Image 1 (cartoon, rainbow, N blue to C red):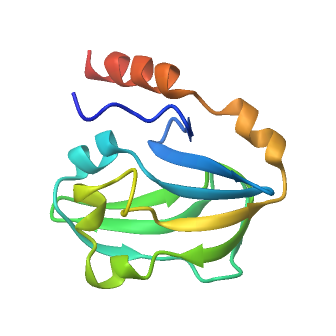
Image 2: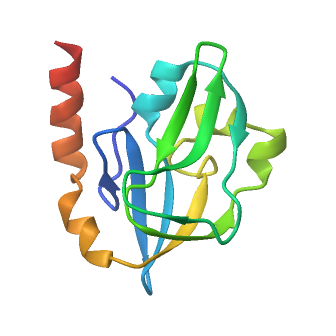
Length: 132
């Protein structure tokens, strides 16, 4: 099993995480489990600043040696910052999916959507189900 999923964030069924920064702002990325499944990440297509997305719409694209995968927005909102380091070092997601490998920050327009996401224990239970 991959690293423990931090308990200070919420998780989507599509293997994204979101951490509430307060002030209706969240940081988002993909989980350690997701980066393990993708294997070596070679490119990240970051969203444009100002991009507006609805919950579960694609917000970014992660390309690995194995596949190309959409990253879905766990909550609705507007992209206010992106992790530009990933343009030159996409492997940061493999190395530190829950830290330096974050993808974007968003201003939520429906903070109540956080309640519909899983906590770390719920996400870990879902991964266990997927493996069977």
